[in-house]
Each structure stands twice: as C-alpha cells, then as structure tokens.
Amino acid sequence: MIKIAADGSSRNRLRFIAFVLSFRKLNWNLEDYPRIYVDQIGYEPGEEDRRQRWRVDIVGWLMHGLGNTPEEAARDLEINFSKQLSEGKKPLRPGRNNIHIIFASTARISQYRDLELDFVSEILGLPWALMTDESSLWDFHGETNNDEFIEKIRQRYGVDVSDIAGARIADIFERISASQKL
Image 1 (cartoon, rainbow, N blue to C red):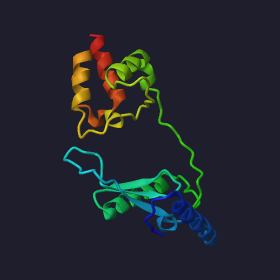
Image 2: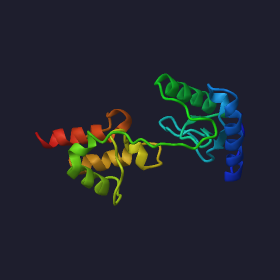
Image 3: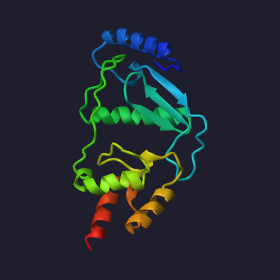
Image 4: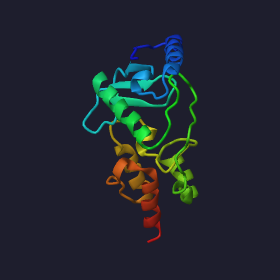
C-alpha cells in the first residue's frame, strides 16, 4: 500500500486501512505497511553530503528509507525493513503506532562528563545536548561538511579529528582525552 500523503488526516486514514487489513493474515511484509514519500525539497546532495532528496516513511513507525529518487528511497526502506526482521525484531502490526524509543548506549560518552559539558558549549555552541555513543558531529548541523567543528576542536583542544570515521563524538572524546594525558 503506497500512498503519497502530506497531512495528518491522510496519514491517519492510511494507518486505519492498514490496521484493518492486517487482520487478514498473520505474517506481514513491507507491502502491508502504509508509506508516504517526502520530497525533501532544497536538498541537492553534494559529494560528501549525507542528506538525500527523497525519504519514504512507514506511517506511524520510526522507519524510513532515503535516496536521491523515490525508487532509491524505497530500496533503502526495503533494506532497513529486512535488517530489522533479520535481527529478530518482531514488526509492529501495520497501522499501529506502538513506537518504543530505545536510546543508544551512553557508556563511552559518560566517561567524559567534564569534556562533554565543555564540548557542547564551546564547540557545538549549545546550552545542552543529548549525546549517545552513536552521536556524530553530523547530528548537530545541516552543512555539507564538518570543517567548522573540526577547526574549533583543533583550536580548543589541539587535536586533529578530521580522520575519525563518521565523526563519532565518542571517538573524538577518546582522542581529546588521550592527547590531554600526554
């Protein structure tokens, strides 16, 4: 069931129809879920840009696919859906809105509380931030690169973090901490 919808009432109708139809069988596949395609107008992806022009969402579920075309976004959603099933996670009943948010671990980040407070204020320029071990510099801006933050880190802590894969903040904190112990 693929639909393009923008407003809340259309999404609710799609969810209701999918929910009713879900009682006709016990095992659901991606085609049983209501989906909407979102043209993220204004995103012209560059070579290093993670953003994509199109997003397809399963209505009422925090699962989506991204791509430069609707077809690419649909393929990405199929991959994400299959991955969830292969990890043994039971899919929600189509049309349901039983979303349980599970935050990533903070075990690594929490080892650097003082650094975290300084980093959020001085590097990110924020009064506070929720960061987990999966957080990345990419999560805190909409630019096409991390150059501004990388330069701020270099100036404040005297550390080059430009080579850290995915710009993961936990890895950045480890490098900063290790350099301060020398």
